[in-house]
Image (tube, rainbow, N blue to C red; front, side, top):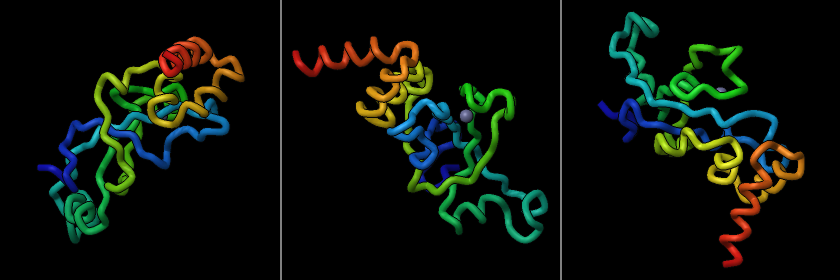
Length: 139
Ligand SMILES: [Zn+2]
């Protein structure tokens, strides 16, 4: 059953959790997967279910960095981590986007300026992608 229009299994990124344009190398992109909220009040707070909470609070249960582990989380959260995220902050992505190399993710989810900053600190693959990009825009 979809929650706020998100089916379980939908891949997402949270716009507030994305790398920053200025220092995009500080952490990886956390790829999340929408999970089905629980229907059992006893498993939540004894009064209402996780689903009822999500419906009221406008949030969606998301399991981050499990199916697509990121380099920032894989040691601290080898099984990923679960969060309730505001439906408005979630951006739907495809499995193909989820597996892009980090510089391509930065270009896709943050900005071209962020990729330029990544190339400036010689992040592997960033300069090559930037060159490709500049070729495309000038052609
Ligand atoms: Zn992560």
